[in-house]
Image (cartoon, rainbow, N blue to C red; front, side, top):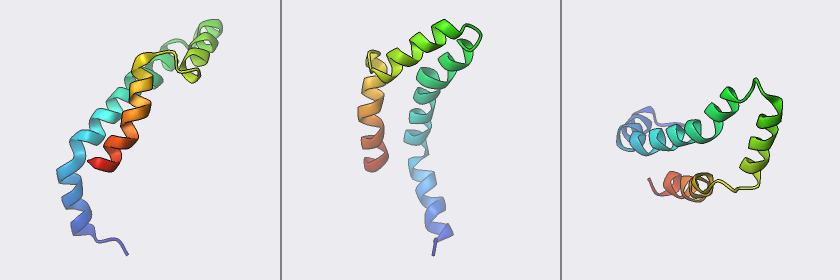
Amino acid sequence: MINIALLKEQLKRFWLGSALIMIAYLITVILPAYFDAQDKASTVTWLISLFSLTNPFVIVLTIFAPLAAVLL
């Protein structure tokens, strides 16, 4: 059973870390995919670079996002 009061207290304490991770994800993954949707060739190139982890910011986000989620 979920304790609603405890959940609200945890959200008050840890919302900033989750918000920063979500903003970083939006900037590095969602927005480039949205803006490159018109040109299919650049979208495929971008997806290949994303999944091959050539962007250093995506690498750092991939490593530290789960750690931040656990530690915060």
